[in-house]
Length: 123
Length: 301
Image 1 (spheres, rainbow over the protein chains, first blue to last red):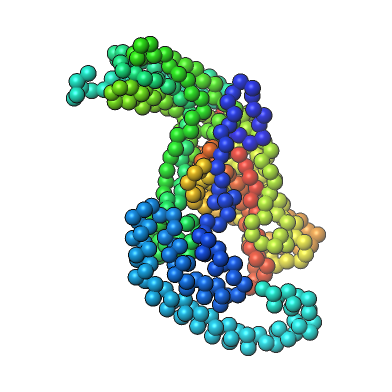
Image 2: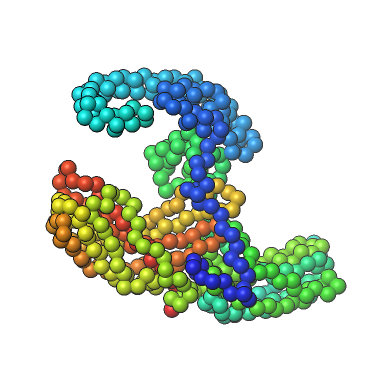
């Protein structure tokens, strides 16, 4: 075993261990990181429709396989754009309905808990 | 040596076959006949380390998420998806074997197993002595295994306290153990203490063991840690949880007979816990509380 023990002078030092997935942080492309950094959901959806975002999903694969995946991504690109637009439409409809339904709750929060209301509007 | 003749045999005799940390293991390397055209003969003490990794692509890309969803939909239990099992050799000590005029005729060595040595198990490490002979003809790379059994006296007893992994800690759950160190197959005995912070709905309490294998390879992209829970042992139903009225319940959990020992190696680690889970009665009750208490599992006396 290992943890918390003083090494003996007559034994080799324990080799350094690697990092876990959690310790390394998220493993995403620069294009995806840029898209995820956008402040609003609609801007994130718009960024995810860019060809650069879609092509970057083939990053990290070996040569030949990477080019094949990029070729497949080119083929499905129209469907990808259509899917994102459909998702944006559903999001807009559901968001609007919920916005109307929760109007009284927001009004109550704005009147009685203005600080929490202001914080929630920043999200 | 002819083109179709068999390669020279190298026999590695390791004794004893089972050792504890700080004990010495000896090896005798012998050959059926002297091996010629040798450029170098090396003996390495170390272990084969097992882990899982994400074989290609960005682990958290949008497409990886879609791949995982497809795997959950259709191919659970297969290796479809981005994660693969792998093993890698970790050399702890290297010894040059005598090789006069390019001829190798055998050798011997001794190795003191380090105090930090991870215990042997099929899930984390397999210790062995490896002989690598580089030569003008076909190289020789062979090994012989030995097991490292980590005992109670070889481990640090300080493994940390309880950690809340779910819930709002509206009931403070503490898991007190008879000892933090247990052998494989042994009964984990302890007491779960529930201290409600206010008047709460009645609760159902259960405990189980949890083992978690973490992969942390040096170069490859690791997979997320995988956790496995043991059989759920119910300790009580409809337990009244009222402020100022703490509850204490004894428990016993049987560890698997073949439990892999707690270990920390270069590319992967094994951790063990006692998990306590508290459900509250009613639809408007607080969220389920889960608490983990680390323990150390050993595979030696």
